[in-house]
Image (cartoon, rainbow, N blue to C red; front, side, top):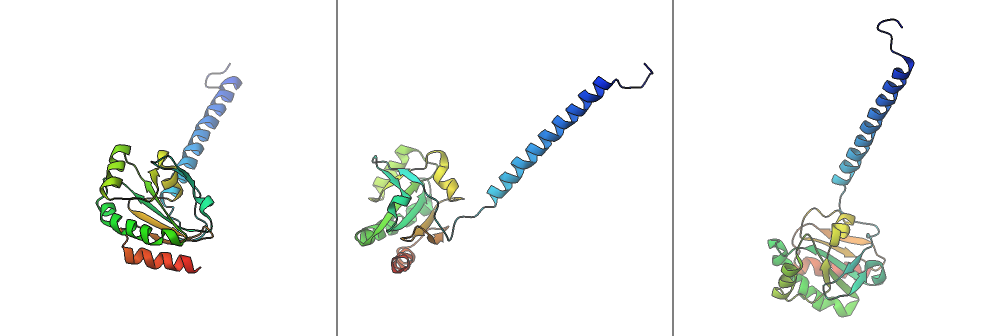
Length: 182
């Protein structure tokens, strides 16, 4: 064989090696693209609310779609969140004022420990259903970027309001009234 000539078997091996490298590069690009899409996704502010099931701290299992026909307030919070503590009395007061009017509140504890979460609920006398977001499934579905974040969902299961800040009783009451009127 002449010097500098690559045997046919080696050429095939080089070709398969290049294909493998290009395959890995393509896979990395796909994962990066998916990651960027998810990073720039926004919270749902209209349309159908993502469905979820919340396992509450008191042992209930509540599925959002089972609450169709009611207005639902979903609040994402954490025990270590100062603004969450600031809005807690307003959320609880709204729950007490509206619960007999076809309005349900769900608290979703985000990135927290159970003992601290339960102490927070007791400290703020929170009586509406609350539970942990195990595996961040719920917060991922809602593209939560931090806490507090609050969603109002109408009787048809559509998001009608979103707040990415502490919410006051007045703001929440106005949004609940709008959703009830739909």
